Length: 580
Ligand code: ADP
Image 1 (cartoon, rainbow, N blue to C red):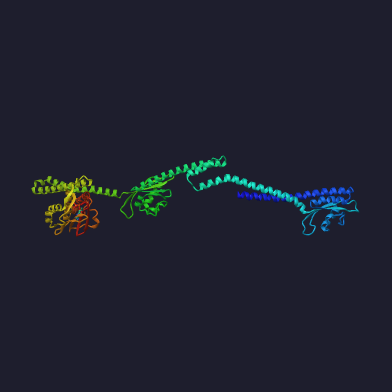
Image 2 (cartoon, helix red, strand yellow):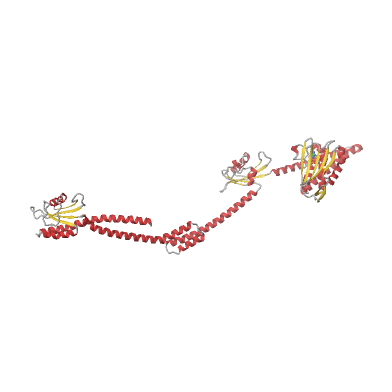
């Protein structure tokens, strides 16, 4: 509105200026015509022979009323009539008269005195004959011109100002009707008030039966559509966020590592398993190249090959500097917005260890069975070949057959027991067991062997120890450990069974002063058929199952077995019970 007021005011001022200029030109033209006409009439009257004094006097009054002056002068610039005023004898006026005499009439704009306002001077030659030169001189003063002009200008100005004020009022009225609701509308929309309030406000304006009403109706529809769309988008976003969170949670809970990469081999997804298995540090993540995350050439080659050949590629490799065996499967994704590849990594160390154990077990069993069977077969062959007729030889061979059969039986019984314990089929009678009595019984059983080997047996520690366990299982554990200790202790040595009971736990420790075991082998002695010195152990009647049975029985009883040994000085096996 301010702009409209300023512009319209400027236009009005321009109009007034133009009007003023036009007005003054029109006034000059009007007066010029009027003077011409009047001077013509005076000339006619004078020519008709009327008395110049009376003619002039009559006309002078008319002229003076309109601010003009009229003179009748001769060529010497002398007034030929009796006049009230004084004719200024100025050169400027004389030039008007001279010019009129020369050309019959003249009209000039002159300044009578220097510095005076401009005057319009008219000269008309009205000589009766050449001897009596007469010139009518009329002067129009600027006031005469301005008078009329002032009237018109003031009227025009009044009309212009009234128009301007009416215009401003109209604009103010229209503005109040349109701009105010629009302003309220934009203010409310800007302040992001609630949906209901926004809709209420738009509905109020939509009631109007004008363009603003139509705009408000359209805005209301747009608002509704926008709200619906926002709701749908929010719902879709919630759904996608929850499903992507679910997917991430599922992938993170996997023990396998999953790495998704794009065409440029940039990581686009990485689960926790991948970080753990591939040793990817936390500073590496989405957006990094795969070679920045994994620095194993074989791994990177496999990824490259799969992406190039567009076929699944696999690789099994050992993690650098570790015993971990990893299997990598790279599945290329050749099309679509997620083109690239997915690499899945799995730790197969346990599987490989079990495979190796199974292989060792099969070869162990075969070997263990083969040796006594070979001896038995050789003995029977010899007997059948004639040794049977020699009673001494026959008895020796039959004894060997008996020994090997016994060994076979022990081996098979050991394997069966181990299988039962491992598979959980062994029925345990868990009850309070007096460990002192059990240990005492076991040692009594080994007394003869110990005496034969000149090895001393001791039972030390507490003489009152009860644990919740299975009587038979406990006996087997102590028996196997004492048997091993005796086997590996030379004459003069000793085997001690110590029973320890404190407020936290109870333990059975079997200690010997025998050969001891090398540190690097300590981790393997609990494996089935593992023997440090295969041949010597077999000679001592060992099957390689004793410690495996101890380990599994301990597990079944909720106990742990550990070993400490100093090669050449002896070993210590500790069975620790936490369930007391
Ligand atoms: P084995 O029937 O051969 O004794 P075990 O499973 O009982 O089988 O023991 C496995 C291996 O551990 C044995 O072959 C032996 O070399 C070693 N070992 C077990 N106990 C002792 C011990 N007290 N002193 C030295 N070596 C031992």
